[in-house]
Length: 393
Image (cartoon, rainbow, N blue to C red; front, side):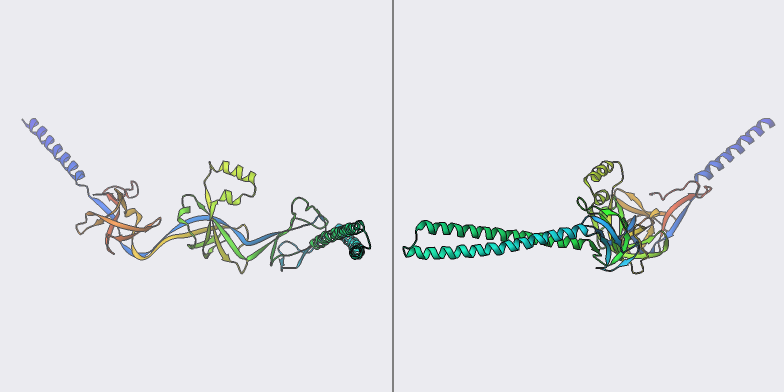
């Protein structure tokens, strides 16, 4: 009898323990992590890497062939418009000029003779025409005189045409002599000198570059905008950027323009490069250049530098803000869970505005200071081990 009593007692204790265990687990409470609805500013940006280029850059080339006898500039030198850059041996050009001048003089001398012959023929024709009216000479004599006059006039006009052509050739030869003196077409800095004294340049097929000059007082930043962001970037938007060598200094400007074609097309300089690049573009990301102009009075910005650019595409000031973690999407609408006075989540529909990577503007549905749930943790659960987002209730 006692043995049976103790067995029943043990079963009762076990049943009570089991009930307590499952009952306590089923009533496990949840801790809500919240933040207050605050007022502030939010902006959305497009981040893009870019490069520095000069706004005004020109290749100064040789327009005549010959040996470079003197090079007046060196890399990095500041130069003014009209200053000497290089001399090209002008022997060939001067000889050509002298030949053309001699031909012109010869034609001018021939013209004098033709004018004299024309005057004689005209006088003879006039005299014979007068005699013919007086029945003092024959019609054949008059016709012969007229033919001689016409020939003299034609020869004179031909020489006059030769003189005009010779004058053009002299002017061209004089221009070519002038081309042997290469001067700067603009103020700027010499950024490239691909030739040296004594080198012979050939301008018969292409224009060989003697130096490249750039105006470094104003630069152009060319951010590369991804295809996914390009429709958001427009002229007039604010831009801030830094350079790799000085990340503490922030430069500010605006978008001047956006290229209509992708970077591959913009960079193409020949048909072959366009063909090869277009075939590779099918397997690589597509980017577009934006153009940002900025003054560079102290010459800190250098051609080829890399820039990190932040383009402001949207912003809102003095608005209600919540963390993005608090926003829930359902059926095309936005919701947040507000912690009410009973410490319970209360779903509420909100109208959102500008959103960046961290904050979202709330246009309606919340009041400043209200608590919104950004996460929740069950009692006994280690915070951070199984992160949970806010649930919809």
